[in-house]
Amino acid sequence: ASGARGDGPLLGFSSVPVSTADKVVVPEGYIAQVIAAWGEPVGLYGETPAFKFDGSNSAAEQEAQMGMHHDGMHFYAQDGSRSGLLVMNHEYADDGLLHADGMKTWTAEKVRKSQAAHGVSVIEVEQQGDDGWQVVRPSPWARRITACTPMSFGGPAAGHALLRTAADPAGRRPLGTLSNCGSGITPWGTYLTCEENFSSYFNGPEKPSPHERRWGLRKGGAGCRWHEFDERFDATRHPNEPNRFGWIVEIDPFDPGSTPVKRTALGRATHEGATVAVTRDGRAVVYMGEDARFEYIYKFVSREKIKPRGLRENAQLLDHGTLYVARFDADGRGRWIALGHGQGPLTAENGFADQGEVLVKTRQASDLLGATKMDRPEWIAVGPDGWVYCTLTNNSNRGTQGEGVDAANPRRNNTTGHILRWKEEGDVDGTRFRWTHFVLAGDPANERVEAQGNIKGDAFGCPDGLWADGRGVLWVQTDMSPSAMGKGDLTRLGNNAMLAADPHTGEIRRFLVGPVGCEVTGATGTPDGRTLFVNIQHPGERPSGRSDPEQPGRYSNWPDARAGGRPRSATVVIRKADGGPIGT
Ligand code: FEO
Ligand code: CA
Ligand code: CA
Ligand code: CA
Image 1 (cartoon, rainbow, N blue to C red):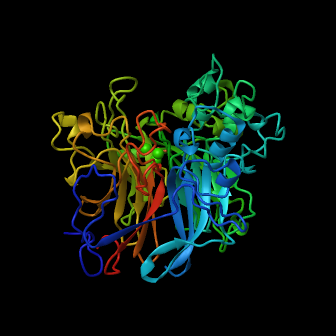
Image 2 (cartoon, rainbow, N blue to C red):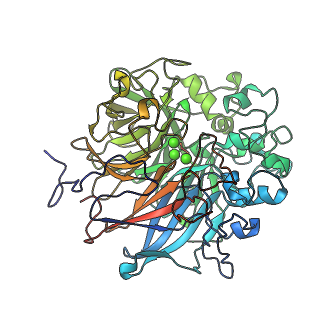
Image 3 (cartoon, rainbow, N blue to C red):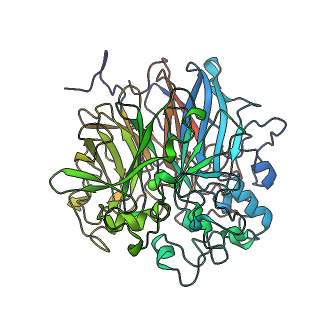
């Protein structure tokens, strides 16, 4: 049986082969077009600075241009399927590419430009006949949110002592969002952007406290040098500033003047994504993965029902509810364990003074509750069949350093990752579920049996982005890191790719392969299913994560292929030449 719906099989295209070419490859009969690359103006009134291919745009210009490293995104239709808002994350910046001379010199202006290349872009896009899609400039909705944009806190930890700083003694007015990886949307029309690897932006103390160590703060951070000119990112001087990151941030894309809100009730984590489901009685459920080795999967259930209409009516909806962490048992069953202050071990004696502290220290609370330590939970998607799917990208430390294998994370030295799925017992707010593996990723040609996987279809490794489209296709995007790509168990898998899975049959077909050194991430489409938007992040990235400004286009010169140019993250718009639905 196939997962056919309507007339024809769910997957109708011919899969594309593995590729190592510096281009986007799509199936025969499909057209791929590039829009909204890093540095293009977003369309603010009176501010449309052109991209300078030598990287010499100023920080002020970057504040009016697309950020770097496009990631999660969503298309909000405004006029059927021909125009709307495209809202997207910019996960991080490659300072070697961002500035004309890279990091040879280091200045306050470069820090400001780097901060401006982070965050979120809101752009208006429209389809113009056969010419494809274009960014509308200027647009009343155009907006850049950066690592410095004023925000507020909502929920139980707002104003908490652990969120107070010298610059914000009330602990209610954080600045900026960063490391925005996956994303989500709410039924009331807002966008959720997720703060992932925030610790790497901070200079930590030589001897971190247990709390700082649990969140990965360390002296020098990961080489980010913002703290040299912006003391907010020096955690030795402002130890609570890191606590103000790691949240899910809610943005109203239809009000460019609105203040983004960090929703503390959803917990603090190196958040990958946030996927919303709705209970039968109308409450919101948010599924979230924490992408780090041996971290957890979370679910939030709102206390109130969703009110009709928009953000104003639901302004506090994500501030009240219950946060749970997942435990996967060996018998194929699982439990959602509540993270409530005073419940079980979450007491003052164990270091949790109140619910605010439980939420700031979500990891430590989950440790005490015996939740299951996973192989880097990334995106989550609710499938057409009621199963909830989660990508677990990889964990080479599984069974080699730290935790051993378990039923849910069954492979030692898990280099290729897997996709797990669960079905809630009762409604989506239930506290019990059944789970199974949807697929173990890998390559059947691998010598190491554990890295062969059990894919019905095309080989892939390191699933990350995940999206269920309106037809019921589950789209899987891969993120083999540049340091692991083309080697070991990933030798024959080529560049990162996007695959289509039929959740009913388990069949998986390779649909798109990205250019050299990129990851493929972020997927969204028009309501008619005939336009698909996909992000290409960090083309040409080297294992170090920083490009050499002397030879910026050496490994990839995508998408411009311009002599002396630099590779740029960008959005790829995919349509079928015959105008049919994507995937058919
Ligand atoms: Fe930012 Fe988990 O990838
Ligand atoms: Ca990434
Ligand atoms: Ca990701
Ligand atoms: Ca990833």
